[in-house]
Image (cartoon, rainbow, N blue to C red; front, side):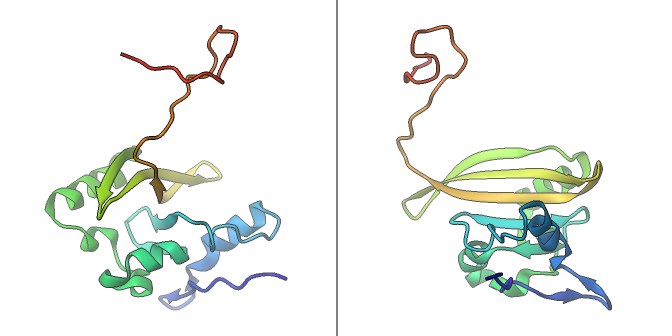
Length: 154
């Protein structure tokens, strides 16, 4: 049974923002894996207009408008320093990766430009809850346990 995207909204006359979502479904043989993904996924176009939010993204942004953020510009959703950083990212098309802690929860934030057929289309932000003490593996070493042993760097 095919899932219906609960985060669907039309911008302007004929621009359906689910186009990027439908493209994702095409790539995954019609499986809507993003909708119930446990991390927040937000997609904006090259100008910063929010095109898509999965359920988790809508849930965590509820106090800022949740679903109403779709079709808004991400720059309008952030204060000074974060706004300037986002504007620079949209212009330079460079990824930004960091961790945050808020209300006792640690998250990995991964913001990256995305491309379709080689053409820059915008940014995707993944916000993933991660453990405070997370194991780290160094892969591709020549050790007997290549990649399976926990390696500490000094």
